[in-house]
Length: 88
Image (cartoon, rainbow, N blue to C red):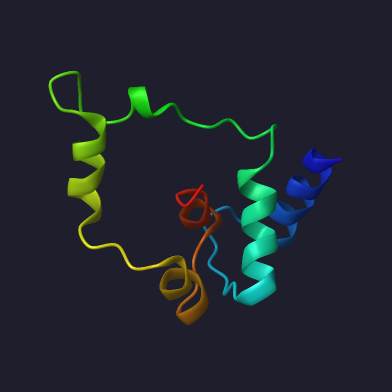
């Protein structure tokens, strides 16, 4: 059932990188569908980063800088499903 909901959400959103505004209940529901789905492949934190010589957590922090909250990224201005997934 969740797979169908996620698939429907992705179809309704159009292209994976297309940007939409998500606020309030819509933002919460979308995050719940995307983050709690057992069908989405979640990347292991151990395999992210530029290599074994650089801790993955520090490498991710360098690429992000000061990160605004999800409301700034997805409610004030449009965001993509990819950006929403980064909050899971």
